[in-house]
Amino acid sequence: MLNRKIKTIINSERSYFIFGLIIVTIYLMPLFFKPLYISLFDVLDSAVPQLKVLAHSGMIFADNNATIPNMMNGLPRAVYGSEFNVMLWLYYFFEPKTAYIINQIIIHYVAYVTAYLLLRRYIITPKKYEDYLILLASSLYFALLPFFSTEGLSIPSLPLATYALLNIRTKHDRWTDWLILILIPFYASFVFVYMFYIILAGIYGIYDIIKNKYINIHFFLALILFGLIFLFVEYRLILITLHPLFVSHRTEFDFFLNSPVMDAYRGAHVFFLNGHHQHLIDLQFKYILPTILMGMILSLSQKKFNKNESMVIWVLIILSYAVDFWSFALTQLYSMPILIIYALLIYLLTKYTRLMPILFLIQIALAGFLFVVTCKCFHFLEFYIPILKELNVSRMAFVQPLIWIILLSIAMKIYENRLKYTRYFIILFMIAQVIMSFNTKEFFNHKMTGYATFSNYYAPHLFKILKTYIKPKNAHVANFGIAPQIALYNGLYTIDGYCTNYPLSYKHKFRKVIKNYLLKNKSTFDVWGSKLYIMQIRGTPDVYSIARGSVFQKILFDTKALCALHTDYIISAYDINISKRKDIQLKKKLMGGRNTWDLYLYKLICSQHKNIKNTQ
Image 1 (spheres, rainbow, N blue to C red):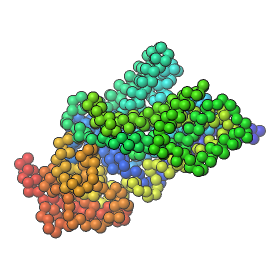
Image 2 (image 1 turned 45 degrees about the horizontal axis):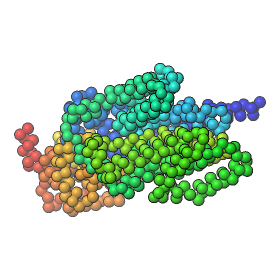
Image 3 (image 1 turned 90 degrees about the horizontal axis):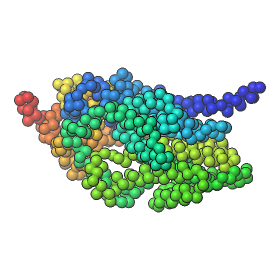
Image 4 (image 1 turned 60 degrees about the vertical axis):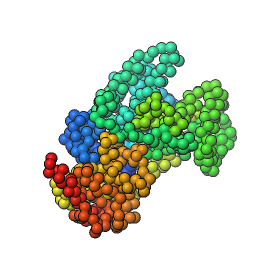
């Protein structure tokens, strides 16, 4: 009787689902221990300070053209994003670190639960032990991706949106499905992924009409509602797009449609294998892709292999991993064309399920879209579609994780139907993939290049002292060797910063500050320019420590141009030799210790600046 109860528990779907929740919880545990190291890129060095500034500006609901003075001598309220966003309110009600932790917990649990829901309803109908394992492995793969957390549920909610839309399409919808479509826009980004998701869903709807010769009114109404809610949430972006408050610096973007053919091809190839190296790390290259490719081969046969035949096939599969065959095969220059031919052959030869090769070809096409929008061979498109110069339309490929989990589930189901001992393979696969995910996160409890703690990076204890020497309190500072977002986070007003949309005229003014630096150093400033930095930043305090104590004998930035931008002080991470300079005075020197910055506060002497202030 006891053994029967144990077997019942082991074979129950609820047990597998709860086990997955436990794995996700273990994945998130570092968030509750110190020290907590968090990724710098577009998180600590961008989104966190910007959300904090808006949350505490007192101007959350201000008009689009109202000025928030903190960054770049003041920017319109419109560039800080919508007030109808959960991320903003997390930073309003909680301290930044707490808000970051809450956000991480939400996105990973939502990713797991909604991936499970989608796969269970539309891909895998669990009937036995292996089916539970397939659902668990696929859902955990998605849930443990290192999501770009500052975009909230943008990617983690893709299965949820798809689940709701498919329920509506098949007329199995409830009021909760419509509520899902209404709520997602308040915690996701339209321009980051959902603009493209809605377009792709619309294309699918048109295909559905052609195939079934029937217009599914409910599906299109749901899609329209979904889009309208996003437009409502992003009303500020829509207004400044239709009625610009300024000429954007994005009009000078020149890194789309500008790469040599082979560079664009390699970029698309890498994207297909690894995703976007900054905003979409898919973790599909090592285990997911080989599993799918082998599943496509097995789909050609409907035979159920016996034990001996299965053992031979499993030995070959394991050997292909052991000798690292897939790393070699998938990274060759001509791998992409071969994969296209391979998928087409599978499509033509199979007599049954053709969904796998179709979805696989869609994945290649989405990655190939990056080739189109970066290759100079398509530069002529800019004349016909001007928005290609300013909008990163390659983000259409950010729906790929959703398709990977569907492909993975189908592939594993094929293994189950063809081979003996599939359960052991799925368990080994899951262990390997989970280990990889645990080692590829946006947060850790140990030092890593490109990561820092809140206290070490923002150094609030140093800035608290430093601010007592800055008068008046609304004085403007420039930052040298340290990211301007650090000063912003600590409540200072900066003339520099990092913003994805600001006036082109200000970019031209700031360029005068760094013109000598641009002559001697390679920079993306002229072709991009979203970062207005006086010099390249040694990102984290541990990397900075290598050059700690450096004395700059000659500075390349133009102090007259800084004065023209009404700069009062310079906060530097390095000592500047000012013995022969009359335009800079050292006001305070603070030693931060080995885990943070040394800070030097310099007063900028601007007689012209003073005269301007006196006349105002």
